[in-house]
Amino acid sequence: MSSLNPCMSCGACCAYFRVSFYWAEADDAGGPVPAQLTEPLTPFLRCMSGTNQKQSRCVALEGTPGESARCSIYEGRPSPCREFAMSGEDGQVNEACDRARARYGLAPLYKDMLFHTSSDAATEGVFRVQLPDI
Image (tube, rainbow, N blue to C red; front, side, top):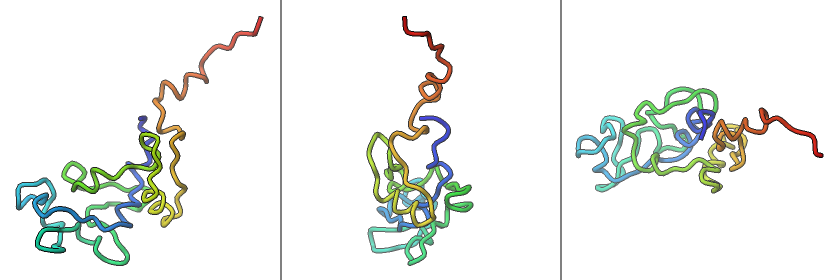
């Protein structure tokens, strides 16, 4: 995958879904997620602060979804964030990704878009010398 991956600047899923996970993923229980950025849901579940409300937005999201967004705890993000696949990734449509993107006026992602192709493969046809048919 090339560096044109829109998932790395989109952030729509971070400002659309509740991010809930097993309580032990927080750093006060030995996990990587900063506990101060979470809130309890049940005795066994936590969620990222800001995501358990109607107008959801994860407290770890920096920037504007669809323009310039990033996760401030990317290396320590919880399992739902690690497991959430960008639509088109591995040739599979993720309707949840497309739904979140639509909320922010962004087009759905497709498996045949340029960012799913290596830069060598994407430019191969452009620079290939075309010989006449004989």
